[in-house]
Amino acid sequence: MTVKKNKIIQYRKNCIGCNSCTEHAPGNWEINQTDGKATLKRSVGIDDMFIAEISELEIEDNKRAAQDCPVGIIHIVDPQGKDISFD
Ligand code: SF4
Image (cartoon, rainbow, N blue to C red; front, side, top):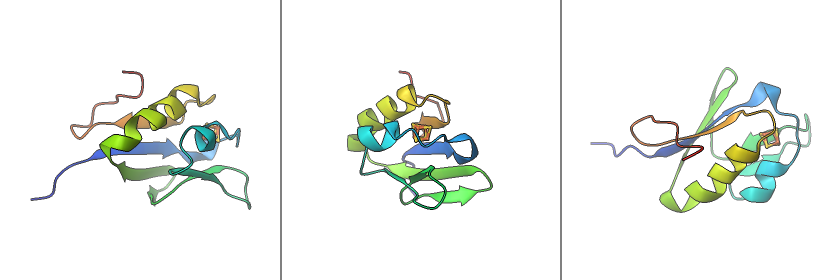
């Protein structure tokens, strides 16, 4: 049986490269030098949506990243699929 984990979801197309997420959680985010947008590390992409599984220890920093993203394209989702970005 696979244990479900918390996830970060990023809708990358509308990223404006403000750097906020990389400052909150540098372990999970980096600015791509080619297009200037944030790349979610260790993610799998489907069209514009990128998903990465995260540990409990990574949740709080990434919630702050989600809350401060000026274009609202970062979401933190619990193992049941509930958006906990603003909890
Ligand atoms: S906080 Fe949002 S807009 Fe800013 S770099 Fe990260 S994903 Fe892009």
